[in-house]
Length: 251
Image (tube, rainbow, N blue to C red; front, side, top):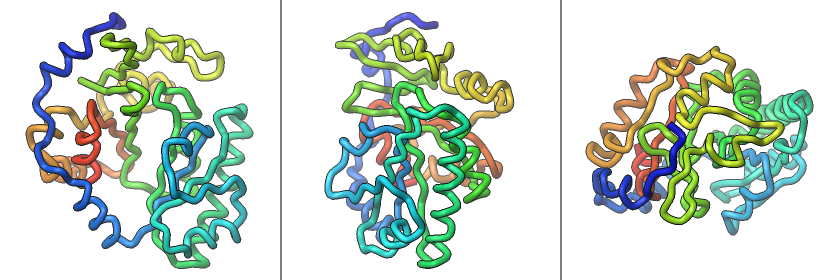
């Protein structure tokens, strides 16, 4: 279904958000982990949503090692790969991953990797995540989280929406889905993953972390669900408010 629905009506039908503020606990857990958060950003709009965070526009081993060794908890690498054709995006991702691996070897610093792409589902998926997994993995799972509150992008019941006033438009019914380079037909993220992988990842194998789990059961249950994922899984996270992501992050 690609018909618009009422945001107010849909959100009213959902369980109330998790009652506990988890931000401080998330910060403390991240500090205890002592791992650097490395965000690979495929478009300049991503860096505009953060502040007091270093942003690299080149990714030589020396530059990456310097940022890894720095005390700051996070840095961005602005690749702008969304503007590139697939083969060049693949080469860039492989080169960056190899340099990051060398920088990690040099510094001994643990890291957590985020590949930031578009909240309207445009970008080189699964190309970039596949290359990163080849060079820096294997990872336990690839988790897709296209929720973006400031832009009115929400995922509910596995369907990704773009808000226009009170109307929630399924993503495949928006102009974004007709992008010449990154067009798609599916608003349901499970189906979207199957579409983008050419059937290599069947929708039925994609794990969904639902709004009900996040809001009614909380971080402990979400953590248990994540721990049961088979190696190499692909998962999606439903989210309709910032606290939904807080629960997932704390898990």
